[in-house]
Image (cartoon, rainbow, N blue to C red; front, side, top):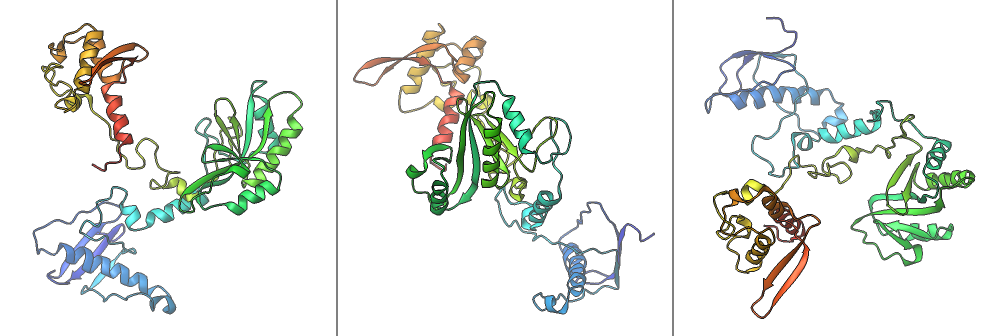
Length: 393
């Protein structure tokens, strides 16, 4: 068999291996299986991995080798086609879902750095490379907004970093700026509350407040120059009425659609960072939600019999009275099976009544009272309580 494309092992005698000859194809996933004591670990760890590490360490300078432990040469006649090897401990090192092969071996750190420094971003709208925007392009984009649009021109001087920033705020005030947005809240600089140095903060300097109309282009260009200088080439134009933001970058913008991104940083490629994690699953790859099939597991049960499982058996009569009020409003009986209820009623109970006002009647033992409001829905109620709870269970 030709040695090209194969890891060739000849005469492996480490531990209980008996003069083993083996060819393993490169570039494929190979699994070594067998009975206990058959030599799986002796082949994978004590022969292949040990020789790969030994060769790698020997390739380093004498100065670097003194800080590393040189592994003994395994008992094998020859190994050809061997690359530097990585070994991950067999036992489970962590049950944390954020721990992966990439993070354990630290390869992910190098990949994030590679993507951030060498990668070329492309616009999802046009497929063109995202390139630097000029100030005139930024001004043209703002001037294309409807006349009368009120904007705050912001310079994101601090983005997701820890610190108190007392000196920085004092410097902004000394330079003539009056307002900043700190963690999404607008303050006069003199009235900014003390910031915890242990928490991450976002500080955006209000460079200008403008109303889109003819004749503001020169002033807008000057303001953009100031904002870009404060925030290392990034500026935000925030609609004062809707809080909708447009990001402008002197470094990354699509030349056709105007799609803009902030500076590419390694943390944008980390699922363990708020800046890079998916907003839906927080970087875990899975979502937690309440399944309607589990909330109402038995269609044959009635509301009176506890068809809504999370609300059944509660000590407080609140939930039973809520369901009775809903049945009264939609003119159905609480003794009807869940599967026999109209689809509109089932949807209203699970997902809420929308804009429809429902009269909810309660008795607390001392008095009886009515509450008139749209019904939240069982599923939104459970989701809200789950988000708001401090109990880890």
